[in-house]
Image 1 (cartoon, rainbow over the protein chains, first blue to last red):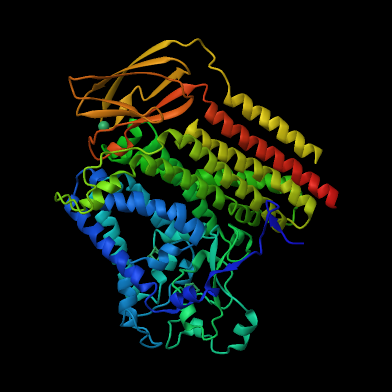
Image 2 (image 1 turned 90 degrees about the horizontal axis):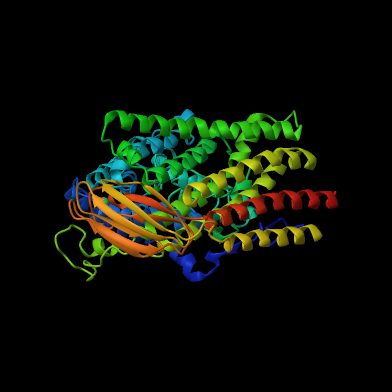
Length: 469
Length: 149
Ligand code: SF4
Ligand code: SF4
Ligand SMILES: [Cu+2]
């Protein structure tokens, strides 16, 4: 019998978008996604320039601040990640210079031998830990780069520079896989996404002896994300660069629409690194809400560093909360799950890790609800800054003098409440299935699920209270 | 099936009741003097009951600050030494953010406070839905498995 999400959507349902010739040809063209990357490069150059010019001024009338922290961030959380997986990585300009350097060309395929040192990424670091720490450390400066143009300049400039340097030394997209601060949560949450790149027919792959999607050919490079396109099973590390569409001579790669969240059930490469990513994202959401959408002035003074003591307090509490307290609470509930289930043979680590994937839908919901609270009040600044990106008095689109206009903020509470509930439902739906994966018998799964269900309910209520209570 | 129906009935009662929950106290006139200073308000949370007439006097302690109330769409502003004022009837229940509407410095977009118009039926509504879903899912899961196996 087909396993149906909410009794409605068959989890195996797929709709292949690339069966349409137009899309297939687009994906196979070397112009795509290159043109999108170049377009974004152009936007990011403007962002960097405006960041530099804007200096220390207030950020709400700055192009860089508004495009990055309102438009881009919201697009990531609302559309790109939950619907299209790593669609941002598809068009991301950050690693374009290292790709260029490694390949010796932007457009054509130059050959199978890549330039640069091409070292292998250290095995011990082939996980999310570097990204986890880097992302957390980045948020230490949230009180600066979300409001000070120069800080955004430094942050983005730093990421682009780092991408280039790492591309110089390490092979292919090592930076994207293991370092990029934006990569970790995209990877984690893209498991929820409603789109995927996958191979179509395993038989065709089996008979294709030279795996050109992996090694490359004259039409495309071997997977820059070092996946094996012919058999990978979850979205986390597929950067949607579309090279495999170009390098597969049998047109055996597909871009599918699918029910949200199915990768959460894929028991492959699950680990504590991804679990911690989920905890960190929850912790950061809470801290960001408290400091940005909360009414407490002293917290704002902490994060913007008006006193060293306050700032250090913020960093320590934030770190302790995200890295220790949230996981510790989850550990307690995992332990309860184990004892409730009565399954002695299942290790606590497995229970803890498997159930941590229930935090993916919940976390995504928490971030979407947070982002609604940022974009509705502040979105109207975007009209101003696109007309006058450098604050030079330009009026490119005639929208320079649009005043600050909060949009639907009266309904904010309802939107946030509804979003949390929708994603809570997804967490429950997948949680119950994860429980069946974790415990050997139905009975154990049923009982072991109860503490986790309670945790998810309490966590949802906590965020609900924080956001609208 | 019967159980599911019961859950549905009970939960719709809860939701319905919360939605129309009357203001507990008599409507009154409430007065608040709010001081604005980069980047917060004092008091930062004001509690009133639905139906109250709310009068606000806004004072600024440093630069020009604004005061816009989500959901009510009204605003005022204050310069140091030049106060602003606002009067409205708090007829919408729930927690609404009031925010600075005048760019006053780098943290301006995050200069906010809360107006809580009690009872906060919005919160209780969603909290009730969460609880109903949680408990409901537990019961249906258990039943489904019993009948299956
Ligand atoms: S991982 Fe980071 S740098 Fe790489 S494509 Fe994605 S966002 Fe860009
Ligand atoms: S499998 Fe590899 S080559 Fe194919 S789209 Fe994903 S990252 Fe690119
Ligand atoms: Cu202000």
